[in-house]
Image (cartoon, rainbow, N blue to C red; front, side, top):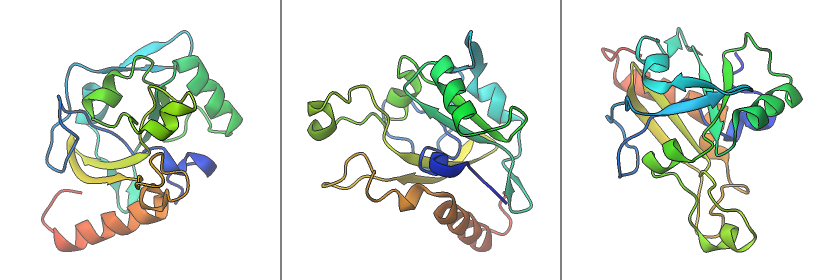
Length: 176
């Protein structure tokens, strides 16, 4: 099973927003956030997109949403560059105004990246969501690696698969 494509592994396995605090297990998906998909940008309502979906089919992932602070055209070009088929479970979406990034409290605010011009960036994170509720939150950041470039492992597909398996084994009655 392939969860994400090549170097997109570190971006995100699905996502969820809260208001002013960092997303955490048990949070619900907001109804007031839209992401941009493609060009010209098509608005995608996140709650409608995820609410009726089952995230896991057997041990597989139903949908992988990769987003970053960029516009839909850039994300579409990135998908083409990474050979992500249009009918893939992987969807690359833009958060051009960092609305979702801010609501998730996932904005990269460390002085290091900002000092080299990396502003309005999203932290490298992965979320596992079941029926609109966050079950797993992983953020790849350390004091000496705020962007998670050197140590993205916690957000990569293999690590997320292990975490999902562990969650399933410890919560057998939970709908996963």
